[in-house]
Image (cartoon, rainbow, N blue to C red; front, top):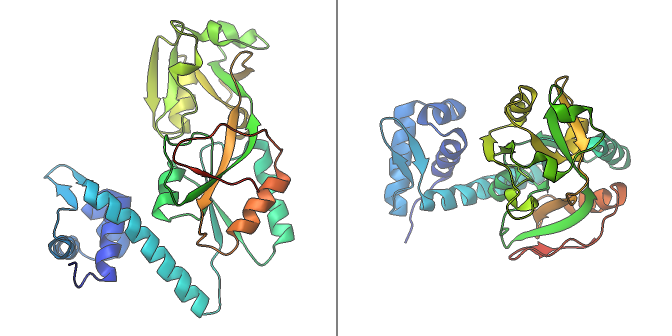
Length: 303
């Protein structure tokens, strides 16, 4: 039986998971590193298992630590919500986006929400991994194009709309003068992929005609730089063209690649009272799309 686990223990684990180092977590919590290490040791003894693997050079959560870290974020978030409610206030609704947000639709969605719901502010968070943040409870809902193979069973998924794919090439690339390109013309090239928000894989190409190599990057700046310098080409959703123009990158329509579906994900039992209203608002404001194919392990909603 787990006994005497306190909120300070959960806050310590959550900070370590977020920051990735004892030094960073201690700074966030405003305590000393030795004090944080003692708190972590106490938590592991009381839970009865190793939660963090520590060496002189690295730190990583164990599988048990990852699971408890996700629960800790949710517990702490629900506590903060309950305290705010008891004090007669409601925190902003937190919405997570990947690097391109919703492209040209982003500003209209948020402006119209503010106009129609002036008492319920929305915070838009640009996140490296929106899905992980949603599972931890760091945000209330997210917009995603690339769904995980299996989503958490307590999440509801709403397919919103589809947007075309485009290719991104250097302005020095011979293809840059073309009005459009095909996957066949990109075969044999190096393709830059984002580590957390990729909507591209070799499966897009016909058998035997895929990219020569792939290069995984951490964020949109690295992605754009690798393309601008001619080291790679990119395939992405139309929203990237709007959100991330670059003077040395040309975006070209792809003639033979299917569209990307934009999804809205939130807990089926919403943690914020405005989540359902925001879902309905997004469905009304954003362009409609056809029914997306089902993904195993996810719970779809249609309104």
